[in-house]
Image 1 (cartoon, one colour):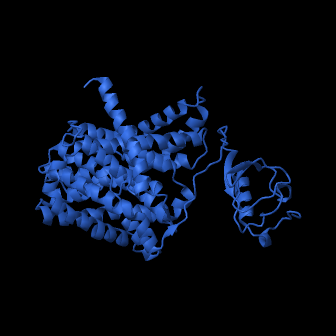
Image 2 (cartoon, one colour):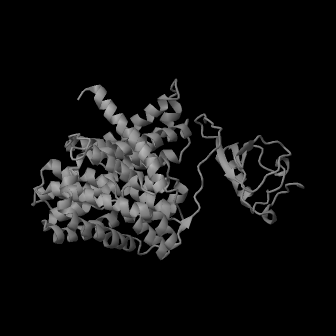
Image 3 (tube, one colour):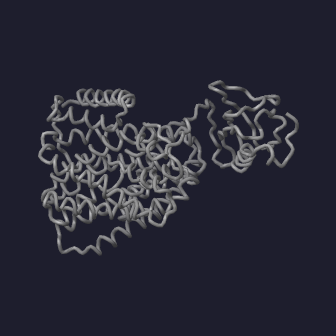
Length: 495
């Protein structure tokens, strides 16, 4: 196949996937499901007839895509909302993955007659929730969730993949070398997670001054710089046998909660890059699987999917969060959003490449479970949220046209604050608000109209203010903006 034909096919599939995603949103179908279907139709068993069975390429592309997806997830993680669910998320990502592995492994041993180590290997392959699936479906469905559900889900899906990778690699080694001890797997897990966490945090901290001080001649080069940073963090961590995936996620969290130049534009770049990688990965996985082989495993795989969705995931969630004060409805929603995506299929390539007996069966079963998870759980999330009473209004995306490039000193930033209906500032003129002189209101968005603020401009409930200020002064403005009239301490003057 020549270069022009490869670009034509690749570009055509990508364009078709984007259109399908738009149509799928209107039909209530997750875009990820449509990407998989398009890949399957384009494969050798479909009308496209593209022959693809390269597991090494799939694994390589999948790991790279997952690294950037996790980094983007870290960039978008708000530490203020994540900190309260830190230990809950860690418990779900470790204890929860192990429990899911054990329950699904026991069911797979019974349903498929697999040896125990291979059955547990299948359990580990499908145990982690998929970061790309969770991030994508929650955004696609514009689903707001009460309490700490959303930050817990996003944090769990961001850090549970490294646990599954270590389990899969360790169980693959045990399947090929039965003399290996489970203790070796536990030691390897502890070492990789510790190294990944330490290096991710340390290198993330170093990346902030690097971005601020490198002074590149073009703004577009900063996106190249962050791509290089992700590659170096993952590669260096993996080279010393740490968890590269955990490292890039933690580095993303560090960067996302720090001040650095071109932060907003870099977030936009990585968001687009993540979407491209998601589409490419799901198309590739669709090409890899042969639909004609799926009916042979359909019946036991359906039963295993039911065990995963209705038994293993809920049990793992309830037991992992046993000591956490959280309403039962919230825990149930966490259990239902246990979406599986491309990660299980990528993980299934490890035993296939290593030559584990029966590994192709694991790949087909994993793919079947991914289809069921996206189709059943992905499409039903809004209905389940309403049924459990955990749905909440979702803050709309920012529509403010102004952007601000910090100097890198971390002093000032352009921050958006919404005026609550209960605020004591509603109806008052800006000159009488008594705001700090270091905080400047530069633009007001009111019902899709942009207003240039003046001293006699009166604020209204729902106004979105863009304020140029250092973070401490912006926090002061936000606190005063949220206070009712009776709680305002300093005089703000007559209306």
